[in-house]
Length: 302
Image (cartoon, rainbow, N blue to C red; front, side, top):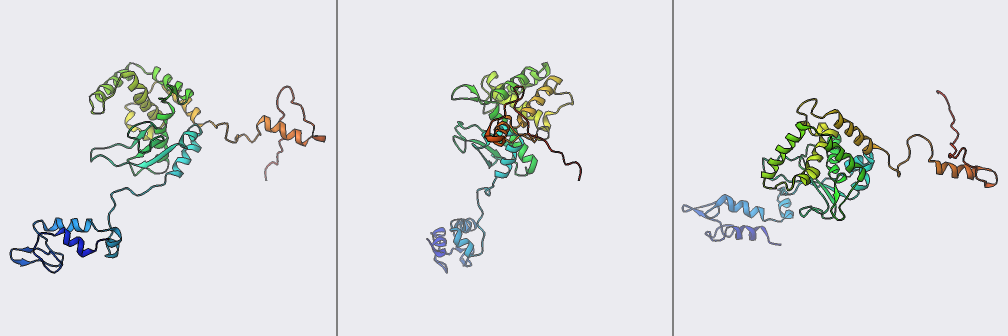
């Protein structure tokens, strides 16, 4: 590993030899130990320190800045999303979440979604959600991640051309069919803007399915994360509100792998347990073709 003198000497090569090897001379007067070096004094010193290994910087009492954002563990937020929206839970197992680096001062993105097969996906083969707004915390962060995951849930698998989730895909198409003339005019204007943008838009139907309808879904289900969509109180018509209600029910319903919340055992398990508790291990037959219910005991108020 090069020493401090070696780094400073290399950074100031070509200057008049001095106290630290090649310390420059300005207008016939020698510079200080860490003064002006050569023809571009301040830059040479800055470059020299920038080349120092981190352990040398720490030993000198300096903290070397990092060009990368600090590592963040989003596992708690992702887990909370899966618990709140059980339908998303299996897909979240193949999802990476990270902070993104804005492209400039005018980059006002909140999040960016990458499907597993996108060429610029930071984690190829996995769903990737990048967070650009580092102020997102708690429910705001969770709802933002959930909203972006709906890109995937309502999308089409490019390997076989089939919907990722047929039920949610059908609801998204139902939402699209509920749009009125006002929405169609606004959508056409949005398409023309995207078409003229550097990233383009492609064919209208494809753009509508993979981009525009997803924006409607996020705005209707997560209005606080998409306030710009509420141009008026009646922007979404009653038919669209009805579809949003169906989507909420679908996203929050317990899956078959979750414990039922009613306090009753699944019929198959109840029948098995009753059979195990019957004399001589004999099965108790179902009553009226239905699985028997476990006895409920009320303890009243304490």
